[in-house]
Image 1 (cartoon, rainbow over the protein chains, first blue to last red):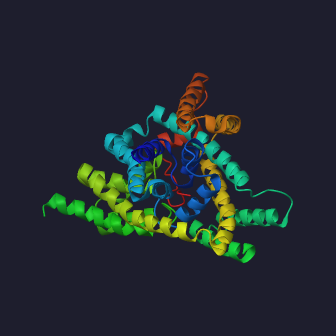
Image 2 (image 1 turned 135 degrees about the horizontal axis):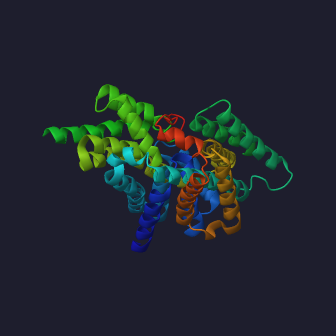
Length: 182
Length: 210
């Protein structure tokens, strides 16, 4: 029990320190840790959790941390994971917050952020493919595959063109799922 | 209650009230924060809070948590930072704990299973959308395009073998090397970098968190 608590804390502490970008941009890092390295859940379970976290109030990354902690070690696990996730924010802000206005303009910081943005884009692109494949969006030529592709395309269009809030899209998608698949 | 004690309590309660309004991350939270912190409490002016949001996005972690913590820190030091952070975290913590319990109970229900079959495809769309949004910011020159390509390639080959820490550190290092080479070759620094250095680029905040 103690072992898992320590592992949860350290895992989300690491995530909190290296997950740049905020929001869904942080998901690949969390996925790498929670699914690939620790095997706490498979991609489908992880995706469902993102769905629930995305439909709940609060930052998606801390929501996921609380969710994983809860699932692995109950309420204590949730607390430990949440603290691990937010501790880096506190440490960084207290350590560099006030001088960051100045170092933000620094050549080295800017160059690092420039590289980070590209790498994070790569991570998200890769994650999108991994999520699509392992959630079996495309299995074979079938009615199911077609419907999944249509839901994917419809969701993306609603985000890009109609600029709908993710929460709205998730709820509508859920209702479509009930209508189609039950 | 002392004056500082009062401020710290106000920080806690202010963010406690804002937190449940933040569906889907920072989408809704920044305008709400600005309204509370700038207009209602008059803790800082709108230019200051713009700086806070800019820094909150540049450091790792959730932008909403970073912003709240930073505001708390600037107003009342470490205790203020803690108060704001805990205020921001507490409501959603309780909600998620309850939700995760409920989810475990209902997830095998055929209707819920059907709903999630569709939601999974939507999550992939959300991640793809994040890639597009983030990619637009990252893609400022040819070198950044190459770096994105190399990252994806490495991930497909190495996958989970490459530790995320290595990827992030590698990205920062690559950024420094690329900019140094550009400087050596006498090329101008990447477009966005120059703009940011002159302090002109105020990143689009409200649309950010996705």
